Image 1 (spheres, rainbow, N blue to C red):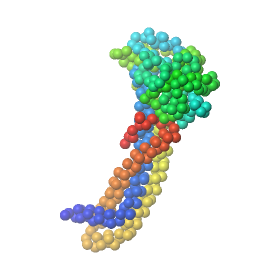
Image 2 (image 1 turned 90 degrees about the vertical axis):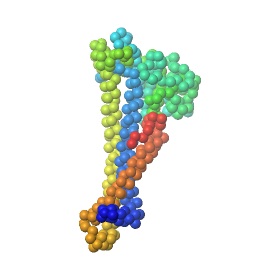
Image 3 (image 1 turned 90 degrees about the horizontal axis):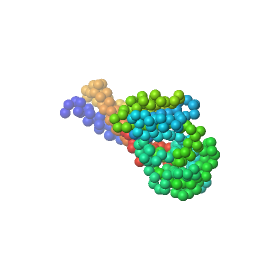
Image 4 (image 1 turned 120 degrees about the horizontal axis):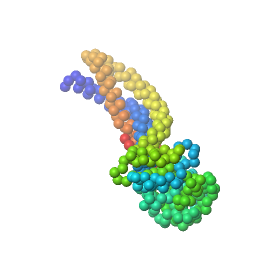
Length: 360
């Protein structure tokens, strides 16, 4: 056996002869690596999931129009003009506003930081992308009717035909009847989505003549950029058209910025853990080397060089680092999963369980 093989064998025997110190060193590395891995795993998973949700919301859209500045929004009449443009397939106008849904116990339904909004119901044949799926009842058709998402209905303990209240900013308390319960793929924990009949939503959440945004789908063979150029010619002042790809990129940038800040906070705790772990590892190895002075001196006495002794110590360090790092990745994934479940339990508005997979 070569001298390197002998030294490796001696190093491994020395390591496993001091199992307690080995375990303590590995635990220190595991904790530090686990917090770092968990921070990146959790934030990267949520970033990817939210990006997917927002991208899905633009599914089938070729051009997105939004209002720029405080000009009251986009004239609702623009939809008629857009329909006459060559290459336009569908035009969907969007109005929405903050609402509070009152549950069967006469208490507000808490969203836990997720959106709680009122919107205009769009029939499936007029929808771009995947429409909301009615699980029970019918779409809202009267001023006093609403449709609510299934998770909010469960939390509020409301069913089709129940009478309840919705609080709006501009119109105060509304007495409404639940006409339908729907589900959507782009749901998040705690989300409360209240659909009103289109004309009713327009009056509730705008001045009745303006909308917040418009989504346009293209006919087969018409590119996003070509359709955008045609739409730009008829846009009123204060409205901006973007291709769907550009709108997705803008959303992704905003999401990445938000989660980067959150990631820095988590990494601060991970950094503290690493510093503490470094001291533990350093002290553990210092004690280990002090207790092995006789062993190392004996090795030197029988002809082992300084370089060979350093190699033995490096072998031990690498083994601890590899084992601790591997365990840290597993611990990090576990921490990310536990943190997600905690936030989901507390209704912090994280994506629903069906949409989340931990990204390593």
